[in-house]
Image (cartoon, rainbow, N blue to C red; front, side, top):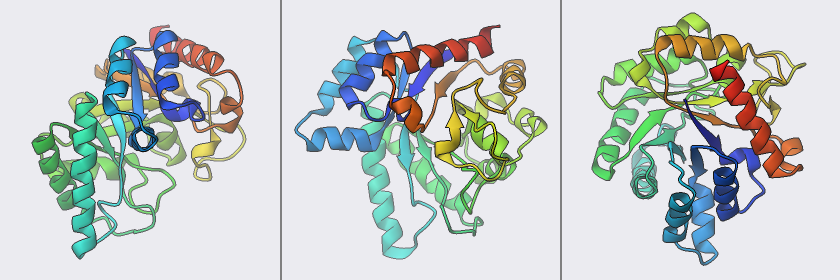
Length: 267
């Protein structure tokens, strides 16, 4: 397994410091948020600085986050979104990422148009050298289950269409292990690992409720075992949005996170 860190896990750190910390902690890769890159450049930095930091620490970039609103708008506003997609895709490709996460609408409940819209993104991705990968969000109004996300990937009927899997969203949406096992392993682009608040019931949790693997109520051993039995041996990112973890020494967060991931996949 290729162990990575989604930088939301140590969000308060500066971008270059995130890259340094992740590299020094022994991770294989770093999953970047493009808004962090834009902010770094806006403050006078250069994209070449980021590229150099990634290379100096021997890291890969499994994917970048994120492309949004491609399923929300119509007409000229949708065209603006496609223009933004091209800009984001080009930056992600420059940073060496094979994938960029494509997030479905937050509030719009209609989903019939999403396969066609996703196909548009895949076409732009081929032109820019990166593959948008479909993500579902368990607390969004549109695509909030694994089965629905997989259905959209299938209906899109494009060889480059893939799905990003997330332990928290699987559990929070009531998605099942059998649904996970029904997905061909070559259609899984990446895996986010996290646990869920140990008290709140499924269906009521959102991003800040994620906790460190092993501290919550998700049966992560069953899910990681299923992935291994399916033949998945790709990239996995620890992805938390926890203020309590942001407040402690990021080196400790990174140490514990890597230890917990390895315990799940290697024991």
